[in-house]
Length: 127
Image (cartoon, rainbow, N blue to C red; front, side):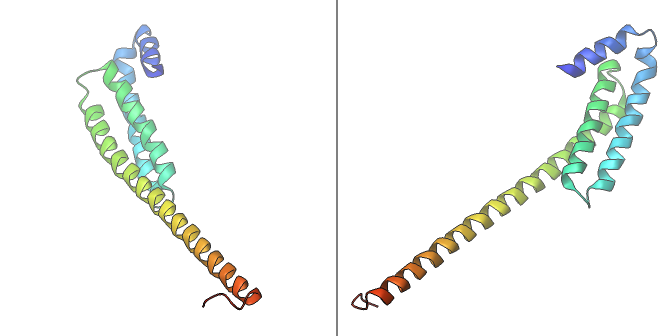
């Protein structure tokens, strides 16, 4: 897992255990804010920012298990991610459903056109 390796490298630095967690929390909060700002424009971009925020909060907690701001930030980000991912899934399902309906309508229209054409060439076919 890449984040664990990065955290291990951070721990090797003398002051990493005390200095990095607040910086990681600040980074997580910044990404969380950017995600909130991006949400009305692009759900996908909002998710990307929130995933970065979650990573920052997780790394802060790996360095400092009792870091309350990191814990609270991660909890909120995970809730927001779940909500946005559900929204993306609903949109994808709606697009898929719409495509199915369009394809079905095209097939029906095509068959109706074929039947009309067949009847035009062969008037003895039942109407």
